[in-house]
Image (cartoon, rainbow over all chains, first blue to last red; front, side, top):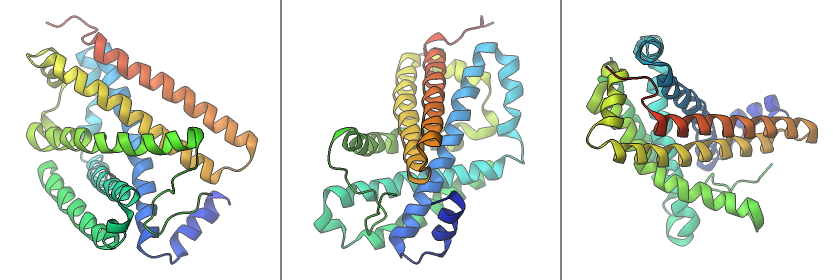
Length: 123
Length: 133
């Protein structure tokens, strides 16, 4: 399956909540992994002294980068809570398969609230 | 392609490295929920994005709780980056079927993993590399 085919199937497949939970988990995971790689390197740049580091910080202080940081907050919160949901379903299947759908909606709402709070603090 | 369970989770592999990797994602994930969410909200809501400068890192790593924060950051770094790169490996293995491409991408990923992880560990222990005023 090519990447394009995978994206098309990802958008059109009607697999229900599990499918959307998985897709969002995957996309947020990749996004957070990319950010984390950049973040390790920007902290490493403190090795070159305060001038270099503070000059690099324009990325985080610029208004154009803020939407990405808002998305990062949603990605981290969703990935964390949905990951917890998957762990619960894996290890307590009998109990959790009954509630996993409801839990997913709760997770979406909590992630959105956390994102809005962070966005207000950012702007 | 790994088939998904109804909940959108990855089914537990039978044995070997795949099983260990599956367990690692769950155990590191559980630890990271606390470490990363606290870190994210602490930096964004308590310290505030616009207040972060070189000075913030000086206070964090050389202040009275410096040893604690260095350990916190080391544990978070190792777990988070290993978790993230293992996740990217799963994505590559899901979509890239040709053995040549797969080998090339996974090898690149391993190199990036080792180099960036070592850079992160280095700065946690070596900070401040430059002399502070």
